[in-house]
Image 1 (cartoon, rainbow, N blue to C red):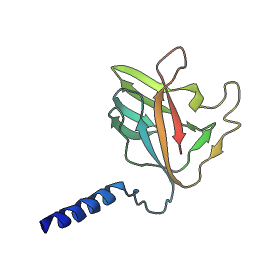
Image 2 (image 1 turned 60 degrees about the horizontal axis):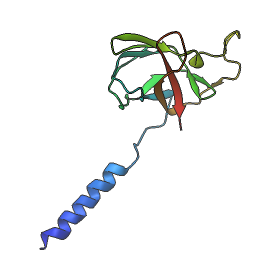
Image 3 (image 1 turned 45 degrees about the vertical axis):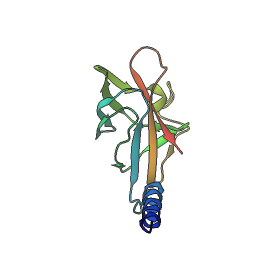
Image 4 (image 1 turned 180 degrees about the vertical axis):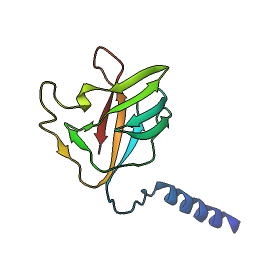
Length: 136
């Protein structure tokens, strides 16, 4: 019976360690973790010339380093391409600024730090598109 309190204490420590937030060093650039919420596996994801790789359904990438990145209306201003279910997918127009303007007039540059971007299928008509939205 003396072993039960020891096992209980050990289990509590393991549970507490698993619930702690990720310790990250101070950011010297923009670091983005991509989260796949498309409902399908993503293969060969490249975002703004950086190889993110494969992302299983519901999984996240490691943090990817960027020197600069912007956002507009919470959409990441990026270029992206990947394969899903044997089809080529691209970033939606929501992730590239406003049509008919020279760039993203309401966009802002991100401060150095750590960010999460959720990838979802876009309702945009006319092709295979993905939305990349910043998550708080």
